Amino acid sequence: MLQIECPWCGLRDETEYHYGGQAHVAYPEDPSALSDEEWAEYLFFRDNPKGPFAERWVHSGGCRKWFNAVRDTRTYEFLAVYTSNDPRPDISSLASADTAGATA
Amino acid sequence: MADLTTLQGLRRSPLHDMAAELRGGPVPGERAVRLLEWPYLTMVSLRVEPGSDTARRIEGVLGTGLPERCGDVTGEGAHSVLWLGPDEWLVVSQTAPESLVASLRSATVDGRAQVVDISANRTVIEVSGRAARAVLDKGCPADLHPRAFADNTAITTSLARVPVLLWKIDAHTFRVMPRASLAQYVAAWLLDAALEFASPLPAGQAPAAEGA
Ligand SMILES: [Zn+2]
Image (tube, rainbow over all chains, first blue to last red):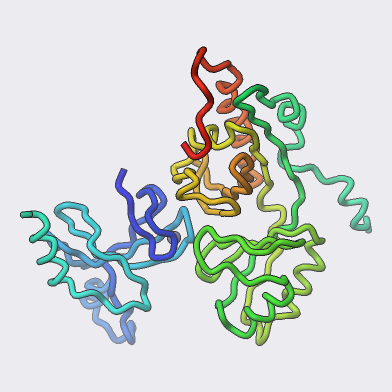
């Protein structure tokens, strides 16, 4: 079974977690000022990269806290986990580290 | 209006109907397992910003620090405090819930804490004996080996696929804390899981050494 590292609880089985979609999608400052197209963009449109992707996860079977993770969508490897207070990791550096690891 | 003592005489614990089964269920022998319900323990949910003034005053009331890391349990006297999250704890206590909640609430400054009596939310099933860990290992995904799960550690995990709090007292004593509505299912699962340890080990095979 895949294990995921919770920033507070450490490594736990994947079944203790739920997925929350793309991270760092900010709620619009003034939703009523948006056009229908912009609102739909906010609600429904998400990146779908092949490779490292910053996502939200919740440790629902443990401490019940939300956190962010960078996961490689090709390999399912978790490259980083961080809380909403932590600085956002540099995804490109994580990507290159992963590529180096994959070819080693 | 009925007074509190009358009401307490009428209440039924979640495993009341299984008391006879639990009493008759112990597995004897070198791989012993015993099951026991500890009903009606006081449990108070506590949420507060760690390190804040309110947190410090609450620690004064409890006579112990709030545990800071996953698994940690603090308190030696009437109150034990279990870590549930970075700003959430469960106080398990031998004092009456009304007085504990009142004293914790009186310690909060500017209402910056949440104190809720959730004693009826869970019951406590104590699993003890030499094979206690082996029984739990059959249905718990967490690593219960002593190198990962020390004495007086408590974690949120699952047992037989339902969420429980699991509190290890010592190598042969665990407290399983399921929600009240799932208690009978968990107790029945434990009775069944313990059954295999009643059979004697094959000749020449010693019981697993401690820590193995
Ligand atoms: Zn967690």
